[in-house]
Image (cartoon, rainbow, N blue to C red; front, side, top):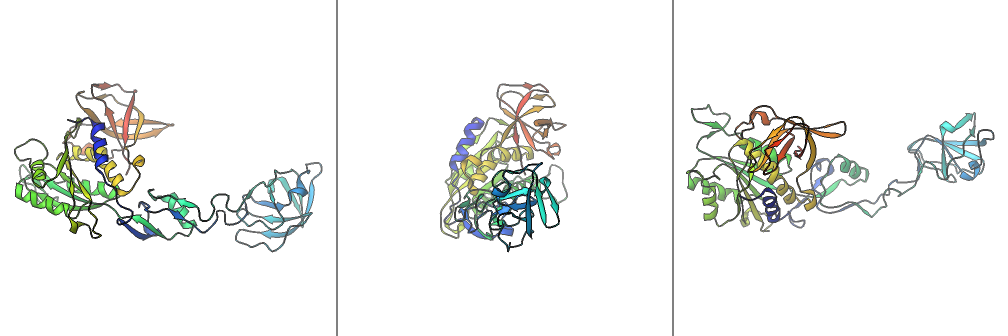
Length: 422
């Protein structure tokens, strides 16, 4: 069994990210949320677009107000009112001021804004009672961004802040990486679909649905291929079908040492290179990781790409924990994110319950991770932490890590928690 960190390192080394030359597509801004930029974005607009006011007040010449104070205010003539969206028409001359509102263009001649709280208006005059700093409350053109410079770099995930920036910059068409195609296979004679009535000894295939949701939330395109019985020829045909159209394959079941566990055998027959057979982790010890070249017909642009194959445990909890710990970083890297952005996110938290483990393998206990008064707290899910108990996995947002050789982390102690984001 490989240590967890070694397995993680091997998996990331096997990933060949999508290619910016052949694995991209152009999408509209409205469809760009969650996508990964494949090329840098620039804008032809300066930010701010023009000198403007950061405050409601009066646009003035600093020379006219630099010496004023409460006992001897500067008295200026108001020549114009400038709301946001209005183009100033008058130039501020000595002894003059323009009434200006937040975001409005600065008029010619003015270089400073006096906030209205330090003024008093009398008809068409304004009294300035406090000398401002030079250029106070003026946002200068191109102070935030200069046209033609890089605005957003390639390899970033587009979220709400990036959408706001792109919209403001009038970038309505974006080149992004295509979403990785992830084929999902469930193996086992005992499995049935949720629509079928259960017979004695049968189990509903929840993995097909769970992994499809996982892939979708991780930014991939799930391609469920359904249930395959524990029959070598049927399994071989299904895996061959999977690799013809996939960037990654996730299969569940058939990777342990039972009489009907055929996945590793089939992969060897298909000429794959198996890099991992098992990992010293609980739950999820049986984990097959293999690679083999994709078929030409699977890539419409003709580029060959190694297909990464994950043979996951059949137990629903083990399958999802394996995905959160090992598949997520690989899928992020495949999607075009830089290596530094692909590592799992661990935080230090205080456990609200004691955490127990056998100590022989790195153990993951699921529950809720909350930020309370500036510190993380981990609440262990109630009930059995068996890999076959899917019920208390609902609402999981963190996996507490009990290291190898440790059997107890008392309540109130610090614990490392893998943060799960959806």
